[in-house]
Length: 540
Image 1 (tube, helix red, strand yellow):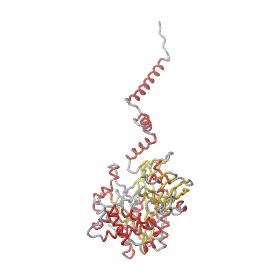
Image 2 (tube, rainbow, N blue to C red):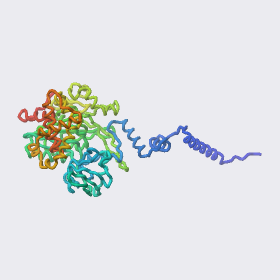
Image 3 (cartoon, rainbow, N blue to C red):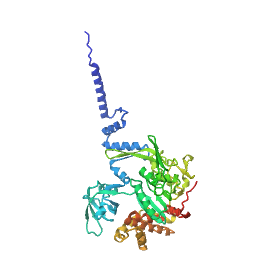
């Protein structure tokens, strides 16, 4: 009898085979002994899904994606980073030139949030909140005495413009807690710490970053200082970690002539972009000194490099950080963001000042320590650059790439055995703490000083104040001992006055007093005063 072929038999075999494979995969997943084949098309997505479905502990997809992206970027370079939604505002606010909140500067003292100063014109100041007030609770929740962090306080006080926050405040002599309902508003932040005239014809500007408002702040400051007679300028970029590339270009434009190259950027997937100065600069001809140190980075190095490469001014201080990479930001819908390095920037002579990161992130981040241990902060001779990293400026000066901006005039960290007592007091934060407590106790008397001139002339760290500080430091374990304490005593008195000045007049009462014992600042002033006011550009 002839057998009939079943036309559906191959289909049934295929179904059984596929079913067997799927069952095997399912059982393998259950047993934990399977080698899954992931497609190459979207491997990362499949790995994340697999880990989320099968990992031994609970882990959310968002957290897993953040860890995966962070790990990936860390292998590329030190400045490509992932910023979570929670961290985004903290990372971006300083560069935007404003944030939304209640407008107070504060510090946490003895587990209590203490107002240092209300922001001028901000919602807190308008309601009468004062320096020295203690914020006890926010929206009915106690924040005093609970070891709250600064970031947690900021999260509670910041919020969208127009929203309300209720605070309870303790004020000395008020006889009870004060209730305030504050309507949040846009609070300006500033790149410019201070701008003033430290000597005849000499102006001083200090910047803390390069943000959206930096150009306007610097432009206005130069205008005002020129009206006061400025012929020479000290631009202090020490500890300035950088910021927006455009802000750096705009600031450099204030000092360079029309058409002069400021910086150019170039990357594998980004075409060369060239940025030149315009004719809008307000200070293209006066004497210029820029102060830098190991904390001067990125946008601050662009300005320093452009000025140095055009022989426009002198760079004074210590070798800068060495960040020559440009990041672009990609924003995600959940509020997080990715900053990816897309190009390198090059100074006008063609040097990239990015320091090496071939030895990994940990070595890169510990560069400060390695520089210190090599003695670089005391003697520049420890810094060796190969000939391939040497460049020449139009006037023949030798400048270097591959590791920050080398200053024209080196300023070592001050190491003086006669300053031991001063250094101990500063390093332990005793001067800062005592000044804070003193201001708090005598705020009503100190508030009579409305400006720096009044404060400088009217307030003296008299012997009774200084003796009280010495007794305070002694209780904290710092004894006033040593062979020659004259210099230490002078420095401590000046720093006490500077911190008290900051507590009542903000930075206007701080930096002008601090600068009187600052070696880099004093060197710059001395250079500008010599040679009949003509700054001599050095030649190699």
